Each structure stands twice: as C-alpha cells, then as structure tokens.
Image 1 (tube, rainbow, N blue to C red):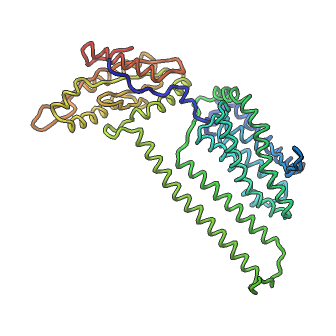
Image 2 (image 1 turned 90 degrees about the vertical axis):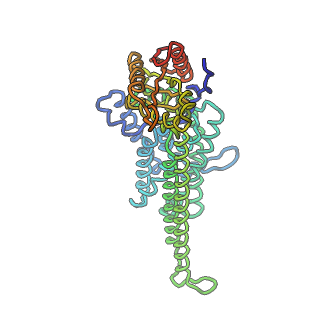
Image 3 (image 1 turned 120 degrees about the vertical axis):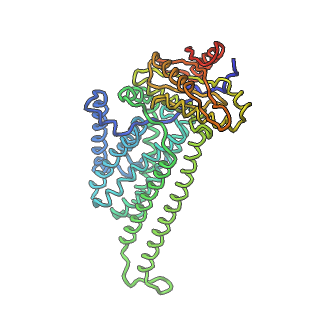
Length: 478
C-alpha cells in the first residue's frame, strides 16, 4: 500500500473555532418552523428587556454610581442591555445583538433629554462595543464557553479594549447634558468600570455555567449550521466604520463642549488675537486630521486585507488543475459534514489514482503530463454534481467529497467519473497518438456524525489500492 498522506486535523481541532453565529435572515423561516419561533420569541423578549432597562438606567440614575470597594471609591454604571447584547452576540450572532443594544441606547438617550439626531449617533457606541468584543473573539478563535485559560484571557483583553474605546461616546453624553468636568469624569469612569464589572461578575459566569447548554439548544433550533469566520475585508470594514463613527462622536462632543463655554465675543489670546476664531480653527483642524487618518487607515488596511484574503484563497487552490488542494480539504470537510448531519444525510469520499500516469510522463514529457492533469480535472468535474467538491491530493491523485449523499448514491458517482475518463481521449496531439487515461477509484461513505476526515480518506485510499491490485480502471467500495 502507498505511504499514508500527512495527517489531517481531527474534528476536535476544527471545533476550536470561536463563537458561531447565524444570520438574522434565518428568522424568515420562523413561520414554518416551531423551533425558530421559539428563538424569535426569546429574542423579542431580550429586545424588550434591553429597551426597558435602558430607560431605567436613566430614570433610576444608574450612571456613575459611587461604590466603595477595598477602601477605594469607584464610579460604576449599571447597564443591563450591555450584558444582554454580549450574550446574544456570542450565542446567536452580532446582528441579533446589534438591534437590541441600539434601541436600548436610543431609548436611554432620548429619556435623558438628548436630541434625536444626537441620540441616534450616540446609540451606535453600544453597537460598536458589542461588535468589537465579538469580532475580537472570532478573529482569535476564543471559545465563548471559556474551556481554556487562553479563552478567558482573550475575553478579558477584548472586553477592556471594547469598553475603553466605546466609552469615548461619554464626550457626546457629557457635552449634551452640560456636565462639569468632575461629573463628566465620573460618568466616563462609570461606563468603563461598570462594563468590565458586568463582564466579570455576570457575563463570564453565565458563559461558563450555561454557555454549552444554551449554545447546544440553539444549535438544535436552526436547520443551517452556524458560521464561524468572516473575511478579512469585512473585518477591516467593520473596524474602519467603528472608528469613523467614534471619531464623529468625539468631534461633535468636543464641538458641543466648546460651544457651551461662555466666552465673550471679544475675548482675545495672549498675543491679542480673537479667541473664538482660533477655537473654531482648532476644531476644524481636528476634524480634518481625524478624517484623513481614518480614510488613510481604511485604504491601507483594506488593501492589506484583500491581499491576505487573496493569498488565503490561493493557498487552497491547486495552481495546475484549478481545483481545491488538500490544504482546503479539512475546512470544507468540516463544513459539509456539519451540513450533512443537519440534513439527516450521509457523506462520501472518493479517492482517485490515475492509471499508468508515470508512463505518460516518461513518454511525452512533463509538459504534456501537466496538460493532461488539467484536462483530467475538467473531465472529472463534468461527471460530478454541483454540490460535490474536487481536490487535487498530490501527483496523479485526486479526492472527491460528496456531501448530502446516501451510501447507495456514492458508488454510482464514482462510476460516472470512471466512465467519463475512459470514454474518449483527453489530449489530441499533432503527429502523435491521442492520450487517453483511466482511473482507479476507492469509495467510502459515512452516515453517523461526528466523523473523522483522516479515517475516511484512509479507507477510500485503501479501497483505491485494492482497485489497482484487481486490475485498475474500476471502482471498489470500502
């Protein structure tokens, strides 16, 4: 038997992918699905609770509460919508969390007397904080169930960065309410410390104790599998948009703060110039510099993200045949196995080895061999279904993944591939005989999940070796 291929990552390693999420559009099927209706009602209840507690935050004066701990005085803000948003983001997805936190922030700002336009802008700060926390955990692949020490550390670090960044919206809040510097500092500290305390005292225990059960229950309510990754370009777009909004919030807050200062129209600087025109000039320069920095960072970050995205795609594509390579197999296998499990169907693996390919290389040269491999890939694709995936495994070996397939459907697919290659020559060359090719195929399938990708490929490989031993140009099922 041929030497075994390098090991694939087992399903356990693939499962360490950080938070999973579903698009909010999944609710479109709620009318026909009792399970999704349960999710919808829970989400609507969370939304209503977020708005109600957001208003209570203002009416009960939960901003900047003075608390004494360990002999020190702290300003703490109690804001339950933030806790709800974080749990929704980590268990369901960012859009499920963004709507409740935005509406809660909007209701809170309006209840405090902030104008509608400013309230609408201010409300984005909570959305940004939640998205930054969620996005950081996705990018570092931190398990929200906190099963490892590194997950706990990443969660705390991401929470600190998100809370501190989003607290810049306190400038807009303080200036809109004409708070003096001492009161404004108390509000700002209360937001940062309050969010971190709510993370440590509420969110982390809930995630550790109820996270696995909650996520398992939610997973059973959806037909589609959860997503686990987003593109680099989307990540950069999210970051740039977040900082652009925060930059606008800070700019407007500073502008309002300066406008609220009672300065005489004829007030002058030490050099004798009028003070107000100088202040307006400073604000304009700050705004232009902030805009330039955001645009420049966005342009360079987007360019780097697209480069990284392209390199990632190219790393999973075989440059000769144009089909996927073995690097992309583990990711595709995990995704299609999960989808097959949800559909209640099986999954098949075909291992293909071209017959006497070395003789073609020796007789016609490697250039012809390369052209032949490209034609083989195209011919195989004509015999596959739209959902089947073709991988060049190495040399003259290919692997086909047949998701959403019953066991009795896999061997006929392999037979169609074998007949397609045998049916007619692959290369017509002037002054030489046409080049034909046959293939030996090993087949295996599975209908119970989770399953081991490495084991399935090994079984199909062994069946392929048996097909060659029996005379080549045939299909053998494991």
